Amino acid sequence: MAPAPIPTQLHADPALRVVVDSASLPWYPSPLAGVERRPLERDGGEVARATSVVRYASGSHFSPHGHDGGEEFLVLEGVFSDEYGDYGPGTYVRNPVGSAHAPYSAAGCTILVKLRQMDPADQMRVVIDTGRASFVPGLVPGLSVLPLHGFGLEHVALVRWEPGTRFPLHAHPGGEEIFVLEGVFEDEQGAYPAGTWLRNPAGSRHAPFSGSGCLIWVKTGHLDPGMAPTAG
Image (cartoon, rainbow, N blue to C red; front, side, top):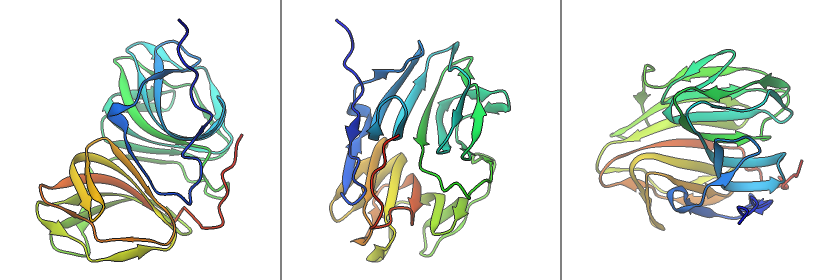
């Protein structure tokens, strides 16, 4: 039996709150052997505005291709590679609109990747080994932050929460997106273990905390209320 096709419409409206346990999702094959993905949000076919967890088997590769809408990824496990270098666990990379590469993984890897979601004016390529970078104190005790990128209203960072850390109630005028990397992130609406992806829309409010501690990847300011899903 042929595998089910990847959904072409999934959580595509940025005005809606979404919570997804990525570990519970099926793996969908890609057009290249050995490369599979778990879609978190998607608007389009094989060329799509998408956020996914992507797994490369050892020795797998992707054909050379361009990124008309840019590419942003964080290496979760293993080593991801292309003709520009090798990117180990915790490496954050942004390839801007118009960039191209031929990715592969000799030993296998898993990445969190966002496609076709960049401002064309943001032409900075970013490569950060977060395992070697320094966190700075956050706005409340127990919180530390590693800024990764900022452009306009968009800000991306890793945030570490020590056990028992609480942040006061606050709003996100431009929305917030979170992927839990370690531990359990929490707010008044639930508890979110490692592997959970959350999208809190523009204007949402919450009072987050972590009883046991956690590490999250977080992006804010990019979910403008006037933003419409775009296929392509």
